[in-house]
Length: 285
Ligand SMILES: NC(=O)c1ccc[n+]([C@@H]2O[C@H](COP(=O)([O-])OP(=O)(O)OC[C@H]3O[C@@H](n4cnc5c(N)ncnc54)[C@H](OP(=O)(O)O)[C@@H]3O)[C@@H](O)[C@H]2O)c1
Image (cartoon, rainbow, N blue to C red; front, side, top):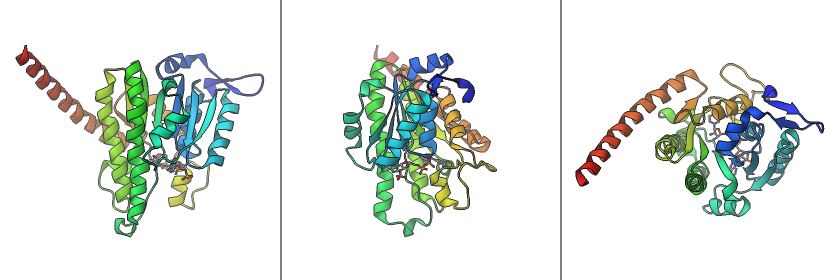
């Protein structure tokens, strides 16, 4: 990413001109949820480096305010913190009150609540809260901001899935199921929205060294990439570059192969449905 920026006189990183097409398609501003830290913060950096203003959404005020200040100072773009609890049923209304929807050309639904351990040991209220943050908020934001993008005829949406979403995943049952919701929602919206100019991507990050992963792996030190575990900046960069190219992507080869097989089946189904529709339309005239 260093190559992509120049340094302005005041020390802020400035945006390289080669991102003009990205800004035209996805600008002028982006929303990133769960942006105070981890992969969300890395998305905010990668998007700001491309010259978009960023609304950083998170649940705690102090960390997200600090993150927004850092993004603004580093990249010289407008970065605003938005404190919203995405487990709330009215999270879309709250976001709309804080963010001018007509500015939003890119939405990254990244915030999630993780879970590990036997399903029956997990309190039902915790499962319900994770469903609200991981599933309801993604659907509500994609519906609200995606609708605005579709009306404008351009935009992008990235939904964060997980390798656990690709099959049954014991000890991650409820988390994996919420990530499968995001995976399938994004894969489906790729087909529904591409004809109106909106790119949708389901992204499977692979293990990434974030506060979330370090809660499951307490021996993992911050800032270390080891084995399959990568740094958040690498993960976010791969996702941003994949947007608009296919319905899904992963930086891990085995996950990418599984996603490709899903896309082949989805392409075949979409082509069959399209032919059936065309036959029905032909029959009507
Ligand atoms: N890291 C990995 O290895 C990995 C692998 C596969 C998929 N993913 C996916 O990638 C995404 C980011 O993961 P990550 O590891 O960066 O997560 P993380 O380190 O746990 O960060 C998630 C952020 O979301 C925020 N958040 C949680 N609940 C929220 C709510 N109700 N409203 C608003 N914000 C809320 C968190 O705030 P608090 O901490 O203050 O609650 C935190 O700042 C997630 O969707 C995750 O499922 C990650």
